[in-house]
Image (tube, rainbow, N blue to C red):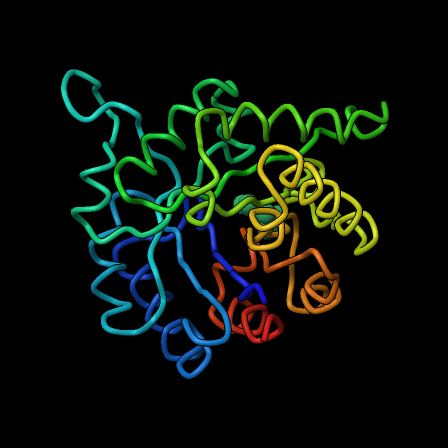
Length: 253
Ligand code: PEP
């Protein structure tokens, strides 16, 4: 039985006051469920990781990073290493979020290096995949998602897959208010699980958690997560409000 996993990607939002307040509100609002019946993570901007980590305190709300760099240290101005993320208490790392792929130009190869670096640094990667609207309209959804998964997971063996989460996020649904229907989400999630069965084996496919992301709100979270292959959500906009994010987390239970 897969434990659902709900993560809130704050993107480039919040500050040193509002960030910890949000994290604390999430920790308080989910005590009793977070960590036990649902895995919960908040994913603030790098600079607020320490204050957010302090704010979640001893609760079971985990903290993640929105990105990572794949070198250990050195002359990489502006980048953040796996050891630095570990040092400030990070557990999870987003790899290949659609904004990094399509706004910042990250390739499948870079995403793969980041995912491998996360695993090597004992961080738990969330590999984000998803098609653009024109790719969906051209009937290429499965082809795109398969390419991103095969490339993103290159060099990861079956034993390491227990540490990986996949987030299916159709790009046309991110931040647009246009959510995939539960049927559309389930169709791609089932495809991803089948693909993982082919790349690895039946037990990897059965155990991996596949989150849905794209305009998840309190009023659509439950029906999406009720689908058999939807194991939680990666939430952007709605994770910035305590009440909305807590409601989404509780919808997972
Ligand atoms: C995201 O940031 O991954 C996301 C899904 O954003 P939103 O929920 O705002 O669509």
